[in-house]
Length: 157
Image (tube, rainbow, N blue to C red; front, side, top):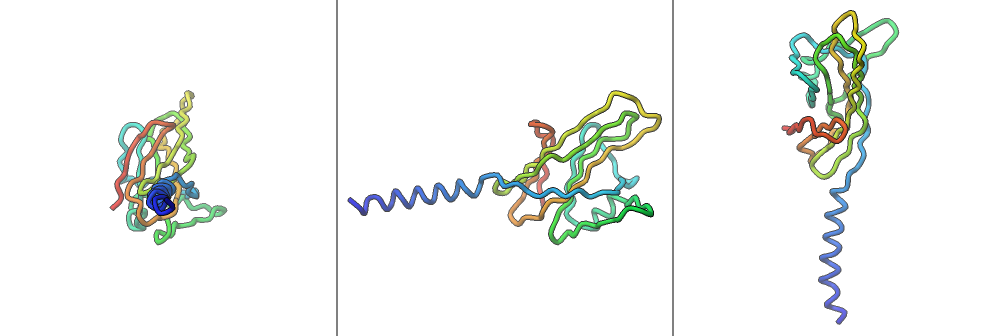
């Protein structure tokens, strides 16, 4: 009678451990500030999403907006990867924000918010938000969401 319980307990413990691995785990988001998009970066209409995993690609994508008072912190691509959301240039203001990032198994889900302002600007500007998240072995996809709507899915190489 006692030996019949062991297979059931084994199956139950395997099921529980597999379920626990896939539970969403929050990731630390760190803002990467004082950047502008290089002129060679083409933005499509609507919200653009990008994942940068190498410094050479980071340098091709961004320039630093250095002033006398700000400090420039270059991400360490050995331990982090960079995420960007952007809107193409127009003459209306917008605020782009990364809300949260979670990992569930092989997938990272990134939630962002886009607040478009109705008043016009006297100039055109691209709107970007750039953050870094930890580089995690085993993650192969990053999904971007605006609210609850999936905007883009990026497969990592």
